Image 1: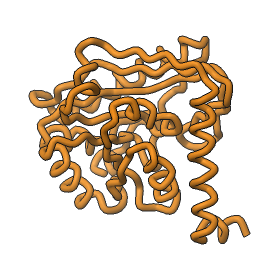
Image 2: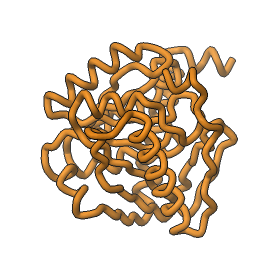
Image 3: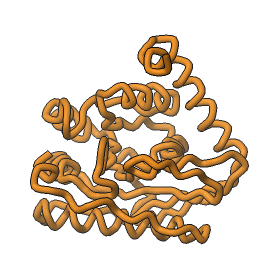
Length: 235
């Protein structure tokens, strides 16, 4: 019954409405602190193209990293059913959908993202999506950054009150009446780095950033999943 509801148009609209309303409610009832280094702020305040990188577990409130800019961002989101629901839920926040992933529609998505970046737009990517391993950077984001000739900005957030799901990514669901800590990292220029070196540098930066954000509220760091296998590195 539940699977049929999720696949129906009514069910999708209902889930999207609940998700959108919940995100707005959590944000409206919470106190927010945002940390952004001087080197990164111009990417948010000026029309500079870049890639926004964050782990899959922190999707829920990520639109609010972007909403204050008043500009649109294009997110790489899986073409699976859950990906469609995410895309529809975040669209009211100015987030457009680039359908694709390392497992499905990857080549078409790659070309689409490069065109957007070269046209001056911004792309958002979860380097460990859509199925993990958790907090491991797949090389796709590095290829996009190199071909699009743009830097990567790691971003994350932590919340004081949360529920952590038992999913592969340890998805964090922020509770209402909360404290939210948004952080932006230093821009990473991958131009002169090998794909392997750039992937390793980004992975360390993102994991350190998220651990520091969680530590802001005295929360333990989430350990990464198993290292990428050869097949996953090619994806």
